[in-house]
Length: 345
Image (tube, rainbow, N blue to C red; front, side, top):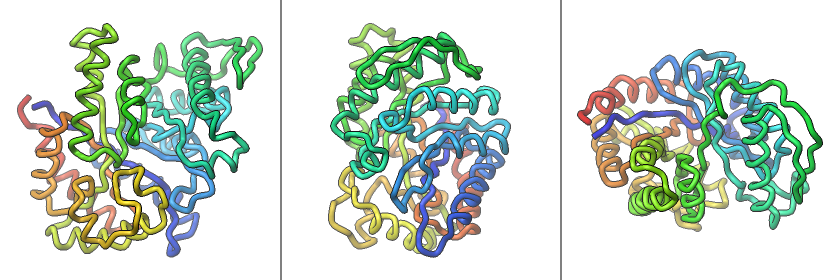
């Protein structure tokens, strides 16, 4: 099997015991740790009017991370393309690409929360139309360096983009998928890798990867290109590692339970709608808590079952203590990652 790569995921959640400053400085610090510890990428989410995610525009966080790092790739998970003016998105992310010397990955999503749409004054029913127009505008202006656009929702007179992204023809695009097969097909026809949220369980992830390959092949892409794109697909996992599985489960409980008790869209992410006891989450295979050996065995089984080669690790779900996050990241880096970097292809 091929080597696996690991990134980190950052939601910027604010539980009651943390201040805004605690959250923002802590997430930035952990992104710097990720580079120091050999992770391949950092992925930053954006939300509005929700305490589980207090950053409204991922590009602000990405710029700070880009200025503090030199190697690690930095991605949006996601840019809610239907909510932002696409020209602002193109300008801001091009700036991040230049600032980072070409390390930007653009993860795109429609947005799923009607409250967030209402806070921006955007009709939730228009999200599909706005999303597609926004993607066209951003990718066109990145590729050509100028644009004139006349659409249903956006009208842009002839203009030149400043700054222009370093990566050509555009920074890599990823489609973020919560549960929709239609989104998988949309990405596969364009050979955009998918990044799956927590929603798809192992069987559904396997199905979606098979659908991705089948759809991309039917669209006329070569087997080599299809497999290269599939190997870039990834999934988000809540992960914590400690010397023993019992310790890992004990340490992760407070943050995880706060998150699931606070979030009202559990069902969308593959969990039961009603609040569940902690034992339910321990048995859910998208929550990976344990000793290094337990994590190795779990990730091996996950990769073999689904064909996913990349995992974005959510170490700090629900605002756990700083020292706990650092210890988990270090142990994962030193005792789990090397196994997957050296396994035979």
